[in-house]
Amino acid sequence: MTLQSSPRAFDPSGTEEFAHWLDGVRAWAGTAAPDMSGWRSGAALDLLALPVARGEGGAGAGFLATCRAFETAGEGAVLSGNNVLGGFLFAMSAHLWACQEPLLAFGTDEQRAAYLPDMMAGKVCGAFGATEDGAGSDVMSMRTRAVRTDTEGWCLNGVKTFVTNAPTADLFLVLARTSEHDSYGSLSAFLVPRSSPGLSVGSATEIVGPAGARTAVVRLADVTVGEQACLGGEGAGFAVLMHAMRHERAFILAPAVGLMAGMLRRTVEHARRRSQFGRPIATYDAVRERLVDAALHLAAAQDVLRATAGSADLDELDQARAALTKLHVSREFNALSNRLADVYGGYAMMPDTGIPQLIHDALASRFYSGTDDMQTKIIAEGLGL
Amino acid sequence: MTVDDGVLTVIREAVHKAAPAFDGDDETQLITQQVLDSLAVLKVASRLENQLGVPIRDAELLPRNFASISAMRAFLATKGC
Ligand SMILES: Cc1cc2nc3c(=O)[nH]c(=O)nc-3n(C[C@H](O)[C@H](O)[C@H](O)COP(=O)(O)OP(=O)(O)OC[C@H]3O[C@@H](n4cnc5c(N)ncnc54)[C@H](O)[C@@H]3O)c2cc1C
Image 1 (cartoon, rainbow over the protein chains, first blue to last red):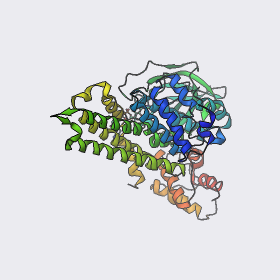
Image 2 (image 1 turned 60 degrees about the horizontal axis):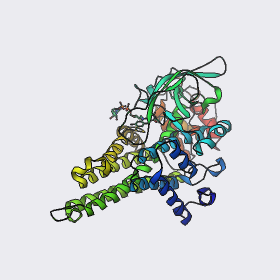
Image 3 (image 1 turned 120 degrees about the horizontal axis):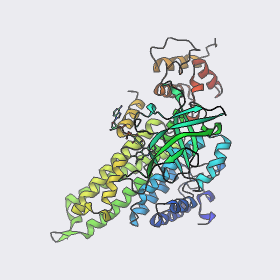
Image 4 (image 1 turned 120 degrees about the vertical axis):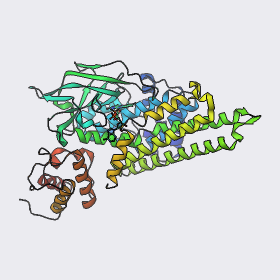
C-alpha cells in the first residue's frame, strides 16, 4: 500500500479516492489472519489512524469515514468466507475507542507521544480494564485500588475480567479506586504497560463470540507505576470511562453492520441456489419476506450508525445518542441474524454457513459496552425521565 | 462570595435540579460531601451546556471543575462565560 493510497493523502469524505481505498480494506479483510500479523497489516492501511486528527499524526478521516471502513472490512470478511474476522474487527475497535481515544482526549503531550504513534502503527495493542467479577453493570462498585507510593507513583491491586485484547495487549488502560468515598472523583485511570512487574494475564477466556476477539482476566498484584501513568489526573476515572463508553457505544458495532450486509448477500445467494418442491426457495413468499425483513434491519442499522458518526464529526455526540446507537444496532443485528437463520433451515446449524457465528456475535453485542438495560437507562435519562 | 452575574444563577439551579435536597452554599464541597454522585455531575454538566450554550468536553468533567458552585463558576469563566 503506497502513501498515495492512504487517506492521509486525500480528503476522504465521499471521494472516488476514498472508494478506491475502501477496495483495499475489503481485500485486506478477505485474507487477514486474526492475529498480530493481521493487526499490523490493518494498521498499515491506516485503519487505526483513521479518526485521529492529522495534527496528532493520524489520517484525519473522521468518525463517519472510520465507520465506513470498518463496515467495509466486516462485509469483505464475510463475502470472502473469512468468518472469524468479525470479532477481530471488534477487537481492533475496542483498542480504538476504549484505549486510544481516551488517550487522545485526556493524555498529556508526553503520554500521547509515548504511546499514540505506536498504537496507530499497530505496534502497541491497547486494552481497557473496567469490569470486575463483582462489578459489571455496577462498574462504580469496582474494588481494584490504587494507592500513592512514597516515591510519587501509584501501587495497583485488583483483578479485571473480560478484558478484550488482553492476551496480546501491550498497554492496559485500567480503572481503579483512588478514594474510599463512593463519589464522582473516586476513580482514576492508569496507563499500565504489560511489562509492569506484578501484572499477569490469565489464559484466554473461552467465549463463543465475537469470534476472533480474545478476552482474558488481568491480575494486578502490587503493580507500581509512576505519576505519569495517571490519565487525566487523580479522580478523572469516571470522565475517562464516560469518554471511552461514549465512543465505544457509538461505533463498536460498525464492523457488525458490515457483517450484516455480507451475510444478507450470502443468504440471498443461498435462497436462489437452494431448491425445494422443484423450484428455488427464493421464489416462495415466506422466504422472500424474511430476506426483505433482513434488508430493512440492515438499512435501519446502517442509517442510525452513519447518522451518529456524522453527528460525532460535528462534535454533537452525547451519551444518550451513543447508547441509542448501541441498543438500536444491536437489536437490528440480532433480528437480522434470526431472519437469515430461518432461510437456511437445518443448514443454519452448520458453521460453514456463518450463521451460528453470526448469532453468537449478535448475542455478545447485547452485553459488551453495557447491557441493553444499561443503554435503556441512559436513553431514558437523555429523555429527561 | 462571588457576585451573581446570571451564570451563577444557572449553576445554582443546575445543582438544585440534580440534588433537590441541597441546602449548602457556593463553597460547599459537592463531590467529597457526596451531594453530587456520578450521574448528578453529568446532569449538571449537560444542563450547563444547554442553558449556557457552551460545550463541555469529557476531559473537562474533572472533579476539580465541579467541586463546588464557585469552582464551576471559575471553570466556566475559563470558557468565556
Ligand atoms: C465479548 C465481551 C467483551 C468485553 N470486553 C470488555 C472490555 O474490554 N473491558 C471491560 O472492562 N469489560 C468488557 N466486557 C464486560 C462487559 O462490559 C460486561 O459484561 C457488562 O458491563 C455487563 O456486566 P456483567 O456481565 O457483569 O452483567 P451483570 O451486571 O451481572 O448483569 C446481569 C443482568 O442484570 C441486568 N442488570 C444489572 N443491573 C441492573 C439494573 N440496575 N437495572 C436493570 N438491569 C440490571 C443486566 O442488564 C443483565 O441483564 C466485555 C463483555 C463481553 C461479553
